[in-house]
Image (tube, rainbow, N blue to C red):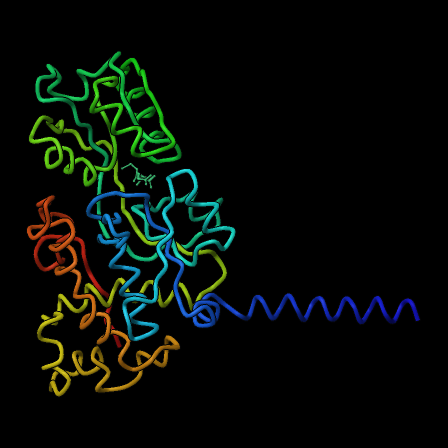
Length: 336
Ligand SMILES: N[C@@H](CCC(=O)N[C@@H](CS)C(=O)NCC(=O)O)C(=O)O
């Protein structure tokens, strides 16, 4: 009798566990009627709240695009601000469904931490900024200088490696909070500040050209959305949302003109807008998933320009983030 009840209890537990494994992230997201999107605490251009708590930025638009793909509306997202240090545990523990937070894809994060990265949303690299009146013209002039940076970032590791390689004396001040690290630098307690180059553009906007960025780019920082290992369908949806943004730009589809293409004769466009079915079903989404992304959020070029590019205050050039047909690295595999 005792043996039988142990068998039944074990069977019940196994069934429960396989239920939760089967109920993947998409099912959870649908059940909650929203995507829990991990973003930064406030990095202008990528993810930052305004005074009314409304979020904007490239990483924010990515989660909105995901929401359009799944719900046919860009607004079914809860943005959860995370510091560099907090972000990985938040993803591992299920506090967020996706991390869309200027996070660099690398081998140890993908293996040891148990994540899968979607395609790159922004190709970045690490750079240094100093006050305009500083004598430093190159990173080599920063030997022995105090450098501010943020804890739990690839920035911190690259800095140590670069100084070691070039036999420079490293004096570093690390901070848990972004706010504190930048404030300390601006107030003059550090001679230089280092991070992904995209996040340095804001200094001259906020503080009226009092700063200069040094010429060296010391690392590769391919920033990409991340999800937990073990949920292929969710990874497919997240990955093809990145590709849909890029493919739309390749195909000349944008938020203003896509509705005119519903009757297109072009087979690639017909697939994209869902006039010829197939892509949506394959992903477990509706036939209009990619149409909705572009109609409601825009194509990659539009969201780049609006958040970090020429229509934004940062005015960052497309560079590596241009389409492959324009000497950049943005490339979507065929969407068919
Ligand atoms: N891409 C790097 C750096 C990412 C990072 O967290 N950078 C800091 C400095 S720019 C940041 O975004 N802080 C914003 C925050 O903590 O909310 C990484 O993945 O480690």
